[in-house]
Amino acid sequence: MPDLLAEITAAARAYYAQANALPLTATDFLSWLDEQPPARRADLLARGLVASRAEPHFLRYCLECRGYAMRAFMAPRLSVPAYELWAAHGEFNGDLPPHGIAR
Image (cartoon, rainbow, N blue to C red; front, side, top):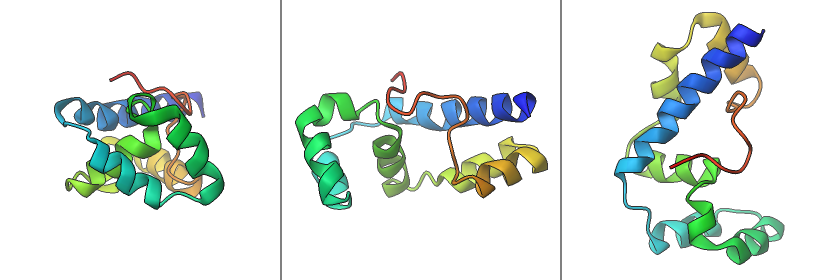
């Protein structure tokens, strides 16, 4: 399993790295906030846009809104066992920290 986790982590890191070329705006942030559960929304709002720019869920939202689908990105980059593990466990980010993707 460690090899599969490393494979998933590397692919997820490459996926999120695409966000480096995007301007992530206050409009993106507010649109994303609207889709969050109320209990989480308050925490995210308190953290603000700057902190959210390292939030995997926010980055995925921004990328997917611009046509960069994570499933389409991951499928050709993962082996079949790694993709099956990734899909079966909620399309997780491997070993990447839950909050704090380097941009």
